[in-house]
Length: 144
Image 1 (cartoon, rainbow, N blue to C red):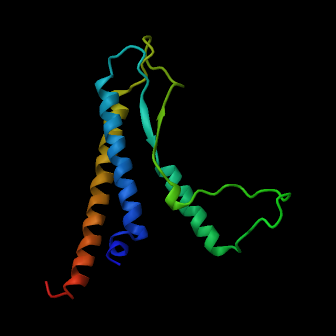
Image 2 (image 1 turned 180 degrees about the vertical axis):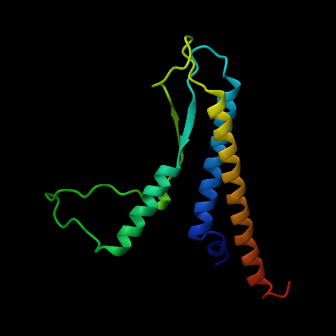
Image 3 (image 1 turned 45 degrees about the horizontal axis):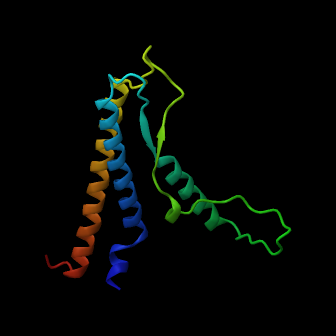
């Protein structure tokens, strides 16, 4: 019973998003640490696009009739990503080169991404704090 209070869909999304933001901050720090390393290729976390696709899928699935395969010879439906399946992944960007030594880290882009990630992480932490204060208010029946 108590697990359900802390394991609702909103808290699950917040937790996954916080984890992805933390991972992104670590990767940006690694990219910045290797800004002068010849041949280094920057890495980034792919998460928000996956989360957005899963949320869109969930929204459209609620509005449409459910589909099911009734025969193994039928054409399979496209695999839809659910919210439980959304996980951050690390992608190394090998498609660009900014300098002659093969390094593709742009310090201005990395600093901008770091600032954006920090704001996103802080916002998520504030939402999590609000969720816990709502839960605390319910536990103490608003008397605190």
